[in-house]
Length: 82
Image 1 (tube, helix red, strand yellow):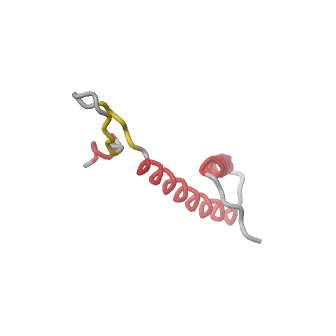
Image 2 (tube, one colour):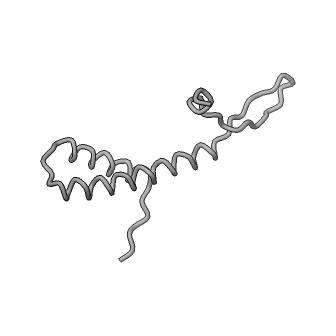
């Protein structure tokens, strides 16, 4: 059976659940490794979704002559790291 396409919010919720379970320290080693693998996949999925969203965001600003101008979104954290 095909897996239902997961939303960002669903993936993030599942990732948070995995973290809580792992932090509880009551899992077997095998279960911990299994959840860790799932968590890495979810983190990658969420990161990809966030990157896609950042690329789609544009900031509209007004120029000095009163015209609207589209500017690409600039991630402040990225510019500080460069």
